[in-house]
Image (cartoon, rainbow, N blue to C red):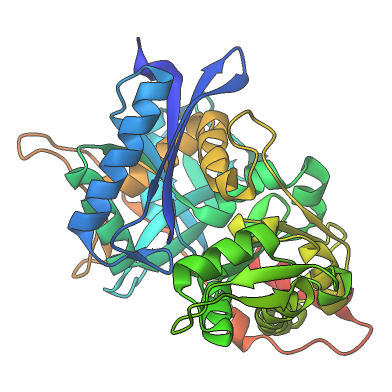
Length: 447
C-alpha cells in the first residue's frame, strides 16, 4: 500500500506515546489506525532518555502499523511548548535586476533571509509561518510564484524552542527508524481540531491538560500568539491521592480514573469507596466527596496559576473563551471548576473518531490534520526550516546540501527584526480594559 497518501501523527506524552494514522483522499481525512504505548524516558513532555523513548515509540508505531496495515516511515511530530518563544520576522531579496518570474527557489531565499537574526546558541527554529508576501510593493500576496517582479518581501512568524528539546526528540525518532517530515508546536496542531473557524479567527484559549504538565495557549487570527506552561498535571493529582490516602500510586490512579470528580459539591456524599491502605490488612472506606476534594484542590491550584499570565495578556476577554483538552480534561465536572476560576465560557473537546473518543488523542488527531491542510507555501517553509542552519559567524542561514551541490543565493536587500515584548514584560490590564489591552498588545506584536 502506498504510504504517500497517508499522514502519521506522533504524540510523545509523559504517560503515553500515541500514533495516529490518517488517509487523505478527496480533501477528506479518515483515521485508519491508532497505536498507543506507555511512555518511557519522558518527563513533563520532554524526552530525558533517548534510548528508552525510542523503544516506546517503536512499540506504538508497530501497533499503528498493524491496525492500519501499512509500513510507517515518515511522521509528523509535536514539539512541546516548554520555553517557547514567538517572534515576527521579515525578509527581502532582489529577484533580478529586471522583472522576472518568481520561482520556488526565490520563495525559499526570501524565507531564508527572513530567518537571519541573532538566535541564541541554545535555541532552534521549529516553525516558520509566512503571513504575506510583497512583490514590488504590492502587498497581501499569499503565493508569489509565477508573478513577475524585481523585489520580493515576506513577513511571518517564527517559533523557537530550546535546542535540547528539539534535538532529543529528533534523535529518539531517528533511533526508532523513523523520519520527521514536519515538526509542529503542539498547541498549533491542537488548534486545528479543538477550535472552530470562528474561535481561531476571533480568539480563544486552549488548555491542554496532560499528565506531566498543563499548557495554556492563546490562538487569535488563526495563529498561536502566546503559550504558558504550568509544570503540574494529572500525575500530581495521582500523587496527592496516594499521599493523602496512604495508598500506592497504582491504586491512586485507579481511584482517579473510576471515581474522580473535579467538583466536591457535585460528587456523591453517600457513596463509599474501598481503598487499600499501605500497612493495613483491611481496606479503608472513604466517600466520593472526600476523594473529589483532593482532586479539586490540585486542579484549582493549576488553574489559578494559569489565570495570571492569561489575564496579563487580556486573553480571557477573547470571545472564544476556553477549550479544555488532554487526558485530565476527561475528569467529570472539570468545566464547572474552570468556569468558576476563569469566569469565562468553558467547553471540553473530545475527538469523535472511532477508537479515539478520549481527549488525550486530541494532539495526535491535530498533527495529522495540520499536515493534511498544509499548503505549498507551508511545505516550502517547513523544508527551509528543516534544511537550513544559522551560521553564527556570518549570521546568515546556510542550507544543508551535499558537498558536491551548490545553491545560488540572492543577497538580501534588507532585513529587519524588532524586539517584541514577551509575556513576562507585559503589564496587567486595568480592570474593565481587558479587550483594549489585548488589541493593543497583539497589534504591536503581529501587525
